[in-house]
Amino acid sequence: MKLLENSSFEAINTQLTIETGDCKIIGRIESYSCKMAGEDKQMFKQFCQEGLPHVLEALSPPQTSGVSPNKLSHSQSGDEGEGPLSDKCSRKTLFYLIATLNESFRPDYDFSRTRGHDFSREPSVNWVFNAVNSSLSAAAGEAYSRLQPQLWEAIDNEISLAECDIYSYNPDLDSDPYGEEGNLWSFNYFFYNKRLKRIVFFTCRSVSLFMAPRDSGIGTELDLDLDEGSYEEEEEENMDEERYGALCAQ
Image (tube, rainbow, N blue to C red; front, top):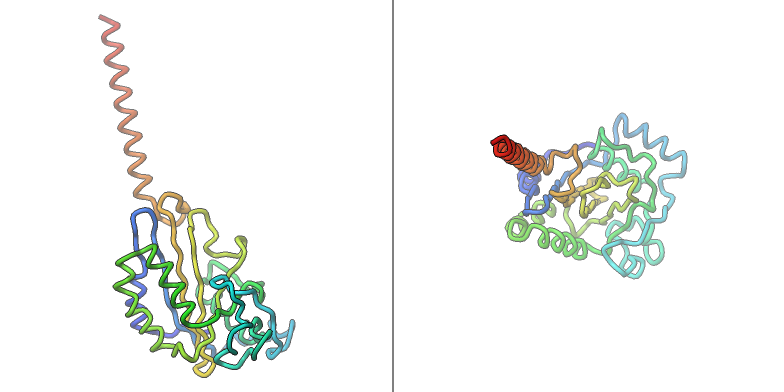
């Protein structure tokens, strides 16, 4: 998977870090080519040892809906077929999703053991559109409302949303790159256009400023303020003790 340059995404990503008082929104959008070369080809060969590329693999039901995709229309790409097969995807598509995660989160995380049940195929573009807007509007308010039209226009221009199948990554806590204490919620969406051989990856999380992981850098200013306050209180206590000692000496 190769990260594709996109100046619109770069501009939007600078606006997808938003502090809201008690939490911080951290998001990014990236575009990847599905054309394999070098290391990807080697990984794909190893991946195919567990099953041929055209074999269908079961996915989990989408978490953004109470309705399973198998009750909806067939996928845009035709990759997964109709009916019960809509809860599945080909192993080749699954490889693209895993390779995208590896590229996006490298070198900190390795998703080579990720399986189909960690992913879901979302019911529709509109469903994901509403889910993302609902989460970010509730968390970031006016800051996201101003960004929203520009964000979705840039995604559509890059990937042609009407032609996409959309997948989400919903791992257990042990496999979640956002599983640290202090992370309030997160989402990871893949907009896959088979014709363009391209994936747009949209990942976002909300981090509490009061429970942020120590190595995240978030909440450091708050810790310094608290430390300074503790130091001032200690100084006042010492001064009171000195005054009390002087009175007793008299």
